[in-house]
Image (cartoon, rainbow, N blue to C red; front, side, top):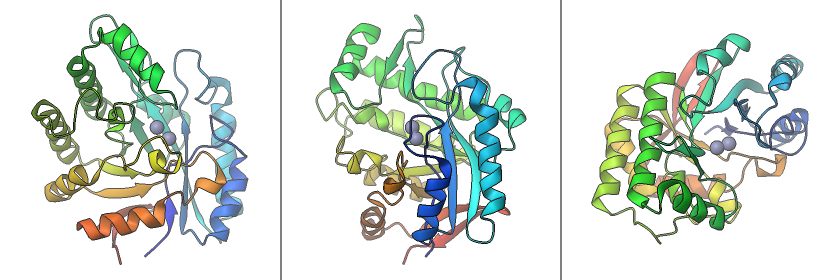
Length: 281
Ligand SMILES: [Zn+2]
Ligand SMILES: [Zn+2]
């Protein structure tokens, strides 16, 4: 087994502490690899992503750490990029600007397909999620969730991220109030997205952040979806989405146990030579 985390944030975006503090912590934890994936700059003001003028500094700092610690740990330069039609850069822009090892594509903001208004589905506040659903989608949960998965599909097809981040984060503030994951319309959306993930050869992330931040009591995605993904032959990876060095292993050992006992046999990792899988033991 190898320890690694490919989804982390630091003070260049909304994470805490400098990237080097994460590197030192990861070495202490005997990680084989550490991937930096700060939120990519977007085309509107916000408080969570790298300010556009800082993107160069972010990339050169990670490159410096790669070099400095090359004998102790593999370090990867990545971005977690949002996709919102007409409001975000094309992912190819970031690939041109920086020598990225990979991009995690994630949906945090759902655009209404006609009005273009935005529903923020992440963060710590359920009231905000509720308000967005009401104001942007007139409370129509099926329309809102459908827009989330359609945007995910569009991102996979048009932007080709290597990794899909927290696949079903839309469920976080729902907490079984507006829909359940067993609803047939919901399962259909999930199944369609999984088929596309398989077809486009995207790595599906299993993300532990909801649990150790106490925002949700399950992984993103949960076990039934993880098992479906395995059935389809989709490569799976495990990340904590750390926003602080102390979160580098947030719920990681527990999640490993859970997915192993559910029947997941292997996890995928990134290296300079490309992707490879390791059996869970
Ligand atoms: Zn995210
Ligand atoms: Zn993240």
